Each structure stands twice: as C-alpha cells, then as structure tokens.
Length: 309
Figure 1 (cartoon, one colour):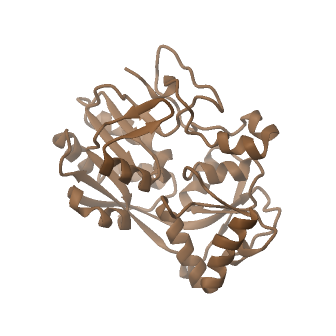
Figure 2: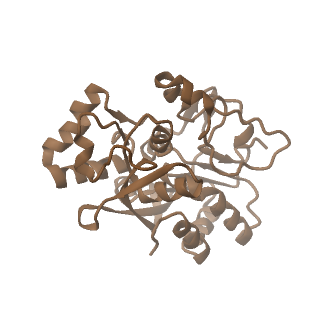
C-alpha cells in the first residue's frame, strides 16, 4: 500500500511559493504541513519543504472508499477516518483528497489529475464541499446531506502588529493580505461578498484588483493551508479565513490571533456531502454519508471550530 507519507512526488505544500519570496524563513520549515499525524508505514519519507503531500490521505492502491473533501476541512480528516473505521472495520483502505473544491470539481468532470509526476484517475464515491458548489453540480449526485456550518474571521500574526480592526482595514495600501482565490475557492466568493457588503464595489476593487497588481494582496495558489503559512512566515499581515482555521492553528500552538467579524457582517457557510451517481463503491458511499450524520462525526467538527446541525 502506498501511503501519502511516502509518496516521492512534488510537494503540495506552499513552501514552493513561499521560498521564492522569503527564502530564509521558508527554509527553516518551522510550520510546514502536514499538520496531522501521518499514517503508519514501514518507511516514513516525509521531507519538509520537498516531499510532504499534505492533501492526499491514506491508501491510493485499491481503495475501498474514495472521498473528495473541500480543502478547508483537512484538519478533521484523520480523526474522521479513524472514527469511521471503528464503526466500519470492513473498510481498511480509504483514499481522501483535500484539494480546493473547484479543483476537485474539475477532477470529477475530467476524470483525472496530475500532481508532480503522479496521475490519479480514481473516481470518488463521495464529494463534500460548500452548498453553492454542490448545487452547481447536482446532476452528478444521488444523495445530498448537510453536515456542518462555518463563518468567516480574520487571521493575524500573534499580537496583531498591524492593529487590524475590521474587514475594511484589508483595503489599506500597506497591509499585506493573503486572499483565497475565488477562481477555485468558494470561500473567496464569500469573502468578496463581505467586501461588497461593508465597502461596496470600491473596497472589492481595492483589495482584489488594485492591491493584487501592487503585490500587497496575494491570491492563494492552493487553499487554506497557504493563508496561515503566509501569516506564520511573516509574509502577510492579515488573512480572511474560516473560523475553523484559527481554531486549528491555535490548537497547534502556532503564533496567530484573530479579529472576529461581527455576525451581522458575516456569512454562514453550509457544508454538504453527496454520493456520486456513478460511485464505483455505492455501499461504501452510503455508509460514509450515514456516518457523517453521527454524533461522533459532529463531535469532531465541533472540536475544530465548525457548527453542526
């Protein structure tokens, strides 16, 4: 069995992007993912900053269940899989991807993805993402359930050195912002909606166009691992993220703080999980969807800062 911790591939970590702009800090690798405990294996060949594949989980050879999770849930996956296997020990080999939901959607549509030197052609049995993404792909699914909620917040370095007070501050010329790219990140569109709500099109244009051109807004290349890493490696002063991101980084004792967004200005994300109509393993898909409604699954999501139905 090929575990994600021993795949000799080009890394999915953001260090490739970080090292170009801040080589000294990036090479220290103090905050490199993967941030979860890796699977047990005869050889662990996880090399920080080079080969660490944080968004592929478990058994890629002959899986009994394949799940595509939108990347902002990566912190939940190891405990979810462990809890699921306790309830269903018949599923020994599970493969999970936690890439951006837009990338996973393209993979579902096209049937394959290449990462480094590896081509993956697994068809998922289950896809989990935001409600808007699921709605846009309804033709692919046989069953859809809601299982968690989230809200936005602003992640800042410990002590909030730039004294960020609100979303509007992200428009300041000298404030470096790490911003999820709306091209493949649903949260990016949610954040832009808050810009419009609080500052109109002028604030959106300032952050998403003017500051992008000037270099003080950085649009992420991967997903939610990248924003906290830019904060941790002192390359961003603020990053709008899901609240669960700050909860997780604080659990890791990484030096971050948050600037809450008031509920009246915030958005509520609905996470939905769906079984594929052409799922290669339909019974496994049904079993996992049922598990995601269990008290055990909900407890894991609450632990990491999500709300549940």
